[in-house]
Structures are given as structure tokens and as C-alpha cells.
Amino acid sequence: MGPHYLENFLQAAFDVVGGAGKTLVLGGDGRFFNDRAAQVILAMAAANGVVRMIVGRGAILSTPAASHLIRLNKTDGGIILSASHNPGGRDEDFGVKFNMANGGPASETLTEAIHARSQTLSEYRLWQGADVDLGRIGRHRIGEMVVDVVDPVTDYAALMESLFDFPAIRALFQRGFRMRMDAMNAVTGPYAVEILENRLGTMRGTVVNATPLPDFGGLHPDPNPTWAHALMAELMGPAAPDFGAASDGDGDRNMVVGRGIYVSPSDSLAVLAANAHLVPGYAKGLAGVARSMPTSAAVDRVAAALGLACHETPTGWKFFGNLLDAGRVTLCGEESFGTGSDHLREKDGLWAVLMWLNILAARGQSVAKVMADHWVRFGRNYYSRHDYEAVETARAEALMAALRARLPSLPGQEVAGLTVAKADDFSYVDPVDGSVSQGQGVRVMFDGGSRFVMRLSGTGTEGATLRLYLERYAPGPGGLDLDPQQALAPVIAAAEAIAGIVAGTGRQGPDVVT
Ligand code: ZN
Image 1 (tube, rainbow, N blue to C red):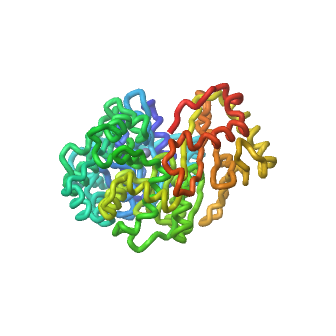
Image 2: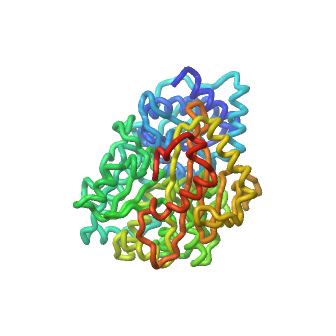
Image 3: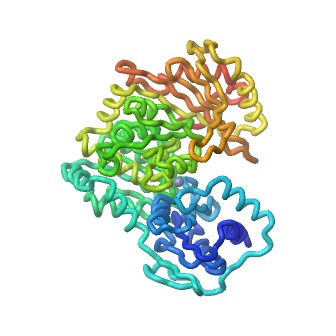
């Protein structure tokens, strides 16, 4: 909101991407400043020679819907206004994201070029004129540039209808299946109401917090058990519906919950992979699957059983984008509540919810039964993430450096009853473009499929977040219904013995456990 800030960022992007002759998609999650920023972007696009902008009505588009519009209209890319799952409001977060012609996030090469350009910028170009009425669907003009205001939901809903068995899901709801969808006052509301209530016929009022608000009504639109606690309480309570789901600020993340059972994102990805053939859009089978490195290996078990290629990538959706573009994978996901497929190039919250509904309708089973059957067939990857927040950056970095130094000596050692099979600092060679990403997080793997992963994120003035990802594999059929923290106790003990987290951070325990 500061003078010239947004303009400078955009001019750097236009200078690198080139505005002349281009068509772009524009929309955002409706948070504070969304409407004003959209007008600035349109005025700058016109001044930079863009020929056509496709804009969601009210400057609203979920991230997945924007990705779809870019692909559907074969545009040169798009601009998405969001700060994802972070709170919104005058004093909260805002973000501008450039997506490429494939519909996915800008590549590292592109973002680095934009940043470099921002360091040498001396001017920006802005069309001087009245605001466009973004409330009115249809064709508008700014100078030579066409502005097509479109319904934000229609094309996305049609895509979902082409992938899923809507009659089967409708019949499921007619048989009395009840669900709760918490849109958290963020952008998914209008999409969920149209698809779930209008087209699939679930009860009116199934979608709650359905109106996107500039401050998300004070909610923190991050779909996890902590921030979606109202949904969790309802699904664990005496009057629980059959199924619950939540999504984030810009609609690309999802959390799914069954009556009395929480489904971790890692398990959700595995279940979707194992059952995708039940969904019309994936009936032909999967080309392969991918997960981010810290995500549990539950999907690896499915891939091994089904004979599918399985890729382990660094964190960040762009790594999946390369694999999807090359046709090497069909489904992908990450532990941070992101799941998606080759239908677009972003993660997609509502898509994941519809995958689950379609699978539940086809199997005629509860979420608890689907999970129980899954674990019996593939074994269970107990999983948890422990976050140590705002750790003094120097301390956090020293802890990681000490752990890295110990890695070569670990294999073969027995720690807390577990034997280290392999220990490394994850690096990734992209099989499509050959690019190498190093230092992506420390992995310590034990015999039998257990492991822990440690990474730092958000190093900055307020310190770093140390993330400890814990995983233990139980092959089944016994030992499948333990409490995750209890099941993970040996891995937690081994991580402490190897990494010295208590001494290194000065903390007795994690701040957040998911
Ligand atoms: Zn998001």
C-alpha cells in the first residue's frame, strides 16, 4: 500500500515478461486491498501494451480457478492477488503472484529475473483514467486494452463437472449423507456453494463462512486442526456429519475430516492415489504420483503396490508443475494441506474435496472405513510435524549445521532402539529440466521405514521456524490404531538424541504439533 511499491513490483514483472500483445488473467482471494490493487494492475497492463485482461467479477478468482482460466484461454499467464492462508486485513498480509502460461507459479529463473529488474527500475507506466466497473460481467475497455469481466465460478465448476461423477455424488447426498464445508470467509465460499449446494444438491447451509470478506471475518484461513477448530469440534462431536472439509484464503489448500476421524494430508494423498480409478476423470489410471520430501511415504506404498512411478520433490508446487507438464505424474501433494492433479497447475482445495466425495460415493463407505481398509492393505505411516517457532536464527542455524556435520557417521548406529539406514541432506535433480536443488532438508531414515526430517523455514528478523517431521511405518495388520504421538515416541526420542533439539533451541517442546 506504500507509495509506488505495488507499481514497482508490477513494472519489474512487465519488463521481464513483456506486456505488448499479451493476454493475462487477473483475480484474487478478496482480501483487503484486492479491489484497489486490481485497478492499479489493469491501469499498468494497459500502459504496458497488454491487449486483453480476463478478470473475475469483483476481481475475485481462487488460485485454482485462475490457473484453469489461464489454461482454458491459452493466455500468456496471470496475476493472482493473495497471501494464501495468511490472515487478511488492513494490517495483515497481501501478495501478488505471477503465474506462467502453463497455469503454474513462476519459475525460479523468472522470479530471480523480476527481482533483478526491480533493483534497476527507474520508472513505471500507468494508464490515467477511470476505474473499470469490475462488478459488471462483460467487455470493458481501457484505451486499446480489452477487459473481459467473467463469472469467477462458471468455468471452474464446468471443469469439476467434467472430472467427477456428479450424479453419483448427488445420489449420495440424496441418501442422507451430510457434510460440512468451512470456507473460512475466504474465496472458496462462492465455488463451494455453487458446486456442492446448487449442482450437487447438498443441504442449503452446508457451506459455512461462505462469503469472502476483506479480513476473513477475523478468521485465520489456514485449513488445519488448529485454525479450523470449529470444524474439528463438529466432526468429533455427538452430532457430527459424515464428512467435513475446509479450505484456505485463496482456495488451493484443503483439510478433510470424517466423522470422528482426522485425515492427515499425507494419508489423504495416498487414499486419493489408491482410489483414483473410481473417479471418471482418472479412470484410465495414473501416469505417476509425486509428493514433497517432508510428506509421508504413505503414497509411496500405494505407488509400489500399483506399479506407479513415485517422485519425491523439494517443497514448492513448481517442482510438481514440471512433472505434470511432462506427463510423468497425474496426482501430487504435500503435507502442508496441498493436493492436486494434472487438471491444472496449482494445488486445488475443492478438487480434493470432490475427489473424496466421489470416492466415498463409489465405495459406499464411511471415511473411517476407507482409512481402516487402506491401512490394512498398505500399512500405516504414522506422521506428525513439530514446529519450534521464532527460534533465534543463529541458534537454529547452529543446530542444523551440527546435525549436518553428524550425518556421515550416522548410518549403522542404533539410536533409541532404531537403526539408522541412511542420513543425508536432500538434494533433487529435476528429471525434466535437469536443474539441481540442494540443501532441501536433513533426512534421517531408519530400518523399517521410519524417519525424521528437519528443515528451517522463515529465517528472518523474528527468528526461524524449525520444523521436525516425524514418521513411523507400521506394516499392519496389527498396530494400526495407536495415537500418532504415542506411535512416534521412538522416532521423537531418536530425533532428540541425534539432533539435540532441547539443548539447541532452549525449548522444552514444540510450539505447534500437527
Ligand atoms: Zn493458498
